[in-house]
Length: 364
Image (tube, rainbow, N blue to C red; front, side, top):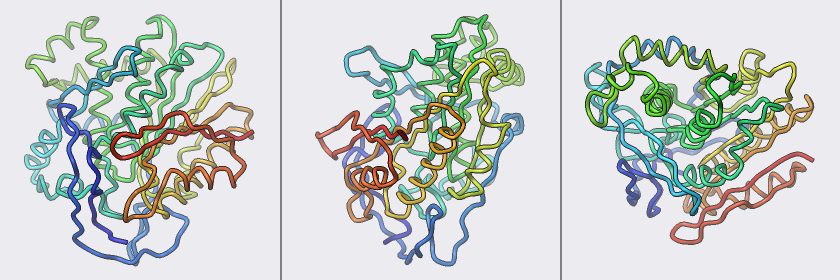
């Protein structure tokens, strides 16, 4: 099992401008992982500890502007959705300006994964697009006043599924009504959350609201760029507060500490007059037996917790049928989920190119 590698699949990473490019195999180091219940094991290397990140502080660390491109996703003949993503070259420019090395930042080089160091979050993977397509037909639940929708995206990276749900919620909700939406975004690497996940949400909000707020129209002074002025950042925070939308960020390895941190009362909120409906999302999170094991344990901890509290919950998992040379597979996840007593339903299968699928898991 290699510690640093690229998946030799055609069309793994959805590059900027929406193009699908092949990833070349690139193994630069070899380590022998030890069995563990935690995520991303590397012999003699500790995992990043579970940590929560304050949104206001993260906003204060943003650059003065971000460059972005738009990914246009066809929803299987039911229209399309346009999701913004910060350009990776813009991330490199920021890091070089901050004297942090630019291309030496893990994830901005030639490897898709550096086990225990960087877990692929800067890239947008095809299974995340599959999840957007699966989520689209059921998006109306976001406007259901009888439930409090909660989204937990594990291994979020660029967070395309959560971005889509966020954008749909803005379109479905009347401005005068509290949206009461909670979005939990978790990635192994805090730098991914700061450099791409959060900027993508600000871009999504700004593009949706630019016709309503003159300051946003002015902030898009150049095509493909958004000025992150203090007024823009303040308007973003005010909007989330007015709509009762909570966005929480967590990093570190999947572990008991991680689960307890995410499950805190401050994160998984609800309303007195509504039951929580939780959707756990994971794209390309089971690429090795070790990642599969820790991801499955984490998902089922959340599912059981929600069931014990009388809340509806399901997990939507998108992955390749087989990760060649690494050992993970969607079939292995399905088998493990059924061993743990879950109802598993296959929602989508892609047979062209590298075979992929999306499954739904729930506890009876």
